Image (cartoon, rainbow, N blue to C red; front, side, top):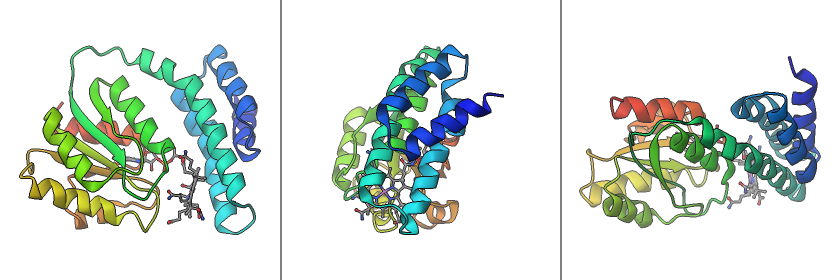
Length: 215
Ligand code: B12
């Protein structure tokens, strides 16, 4: 079902066409496609494809930038609907979330933020390129239950380890749990750096956050 729609969504990202992507996102909602399904089956495959083409040297940075812009335009349309669907009232826990220093990839982190808050978590989104100490300071300030750290580059993954160490230094662990994610991140890596959880996508992030807090 909706294969044609999903193909068009994928193509709008590959083409780096923000307006078209946002039109297709609105259309998807009109057709009753769940926002997360539109993201996972339609738009993300476009980003996966362009990322692979970039790795192979078939497309260049401006193409990556435009694909990212198109994705953001689509998510901007779908996000309010995702928020609306999370009807839970009770706050499940507080999560401080950000992308590590030196890394400006925001799309995946923002999706994690949206789904966590739609699922009933109170999220403090620090944005991208976040200094290590900032994670710890914010966690202390808001008495966070969980700190979530995103990294999309093999070079910035180290920053996740530094965040775990900073929380240790601030005496916030093991009370404050750390979850990590991002394309190059694996469960093994999470274990190696002493994180409490790894999520391969935003749905998994919610599941792991819930299970860490026994909710
Ligand atoms: C779009 C994009 C960009 C855009 C980002 C736009 C933006 N505003 O975010 C721009 C153009 C800025 C960009 C820049 C660069 N990029 Co780039 N980019 C991508 C691309 C194509 C898609 C990333 C994305 O948004 N994916 C979609 C989202 C939904 O998925 P996600 O981020 O993985 O997030 C999901 C999960 O990982 C998980 N998750 C994410 N975070 C967290 C956190 C927690 C706590 C949890 C539990 C889960 C979780 O849940 C998310 C939702 O499902 C990837 C390719 C790829 N396949 O990842 C390359 C990629 C990540 N980029 C790459 C590179 C090399 C770069 C540059 C260095 C290029 C350059 N030469 O300048 C720069 C780096 C800039 C910097 N300092 O950060 C490489 C990284 C290679 C590596 N392994 O180190 C990749 C893999 C492309 C490639 N194949 O070569 N990029």
